[in-house]
Image: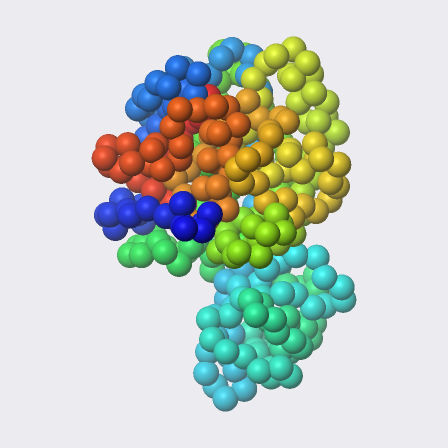
Length: 342
């Protein structure tokens, strides 16, 4: 059995969340204490009740762009393109995913007539050259694009206008992601107010979510211990407050796997971009606790969470916890419920 196969599990379809909790903070919260092996169930609005005073939360302030758009081919057919805008390339060339085969040198058109040309392709991606200034792309996506919620979310009935708000954190700031840092979707001003009452503060970091977070894991990823590059930034003030928290033994609570990747990459001397692939065994340098959602089988996200559990010498692995969550009817994936690992 391969390492990937050990992260497979069966999930009843009805537990795949097709819409977010309403309100945001009414999502269920699965709490697992690795020291006591205690499992508790609560709601996210009670998050502060489960965190030690003077904890420090680290949040990802990236913002999702409506980067999925339908373009017209020269023969009149349509193709759905996902612009991987978080990946930095030279000139006017942007990597993309497409829902059907494209041919090099073919031309695709936005509804207003602006065009892109297919310049090359790899096993996973196409590279499109914009026939207009790169700075015009965000406005085109805002006008014609849709929110790139994952394809496994079936039966979603939310209007695009609603999706642009709900598949977005309330503190989203820098628009460069093609997927949301979903563990942060549950936060509300009510949650932040209750955290503040316990002297629990928070600091921002930014990791722009792309293929490195949600692409299927391949054997070569495991062999090379690398994923696709994702760009990150840690403000100087955030880095300082994280260092102070560690020095004073105040728990650093990472909100989401993207934050873990950011902090662990920086702790290993990476700057600007990370291709780090975290899976067991892994020695974590920064996080003391983790807030995360319930992830798809065989994903890098599952492997990261399991690595965290093992590093904390937890008696249960991720599949043990997921089995409990399934029995208790927790909702899974991007619009699903949350887990807190202490």
